[in-house]
Image (tube, rainbow, N blue to C red):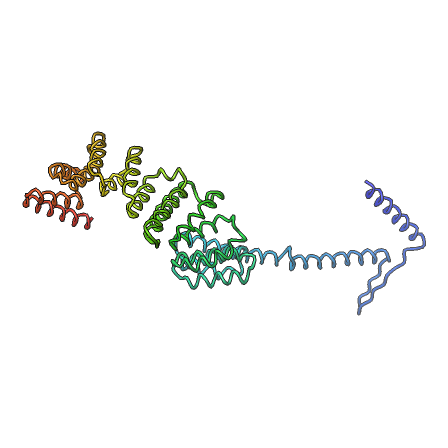
Length: 403
């Protein structure tokens, strides 16, 4: 409101000044050029001068706008940006369509002009790696680190991933361990570190990663459960088989591993089977039998049934009694029939062994059951039947191989 009042007062003053000046005369302007002569009042000349000056400024400003950021230059820049974005989009579509060679080429070439150069180079490197052009992928990632230092962390993760795809976990670990201290919460980094340790068969290191994977939700619950099962099974096997030292030292190592496993996983049948097998290898057969028996009473599992039948028990009669008790509830279980046949075979109960193994072969033909049955038939003197069973077992093996 004040500005408007000021402008109004100023306009009145200018008008009053103009009227006062006009009282002294209007004057005139004379322009002569060759044969042409133009005469006008001074005020008309002044008005033409002001109008021409305003028009000239307007033309200059218009030209500046056309050639500047708001006009032709902006149009050209937007057009070039749209073309580069189209190239990026086309490259990403090629990547999604598994045309990795063309995707790597297009994304890499358009990176410098793209509005998302880091995205271009990351996907170009991944496309090259997926196409098994690992050297090209590493060159692209090195280019990314040099041109965009702030993206070094992403480039390092991608570089480690290329080594993992190439099955070189040692090289990947050198990179990942260098950046882990600064980024211990990064989910992708945790997964890559876990994969690198897994490929290196460093089960102790993978086991240490489980807590962070769970804490930061780096993998789904289903994948974490599967990984835990796999790690603890391999950990139980590797420390017993590959470890050095006396039997008592191995027994102590095995117990340390078992108590390291969370209680929930100690009820997993596959982990129990690995632990039981390790107990057998360190000569703790009685503990092995008690563990498998308790586990089967709680949860029936074919792997544990097979393992129970393979036990070289110090008291096979008791072992047979336990298995026959289960037979009342699982009479149609081929694994249990095979286990009963093997126990009876060790006890030299040839009649029972023959019956159980024959039922197992009828219920589910297998090479292993046929071999055991043929051996029992040979023991009881039926060589012709034994030869026939061996033949059937061989045919079964050939059929399985062909399938």
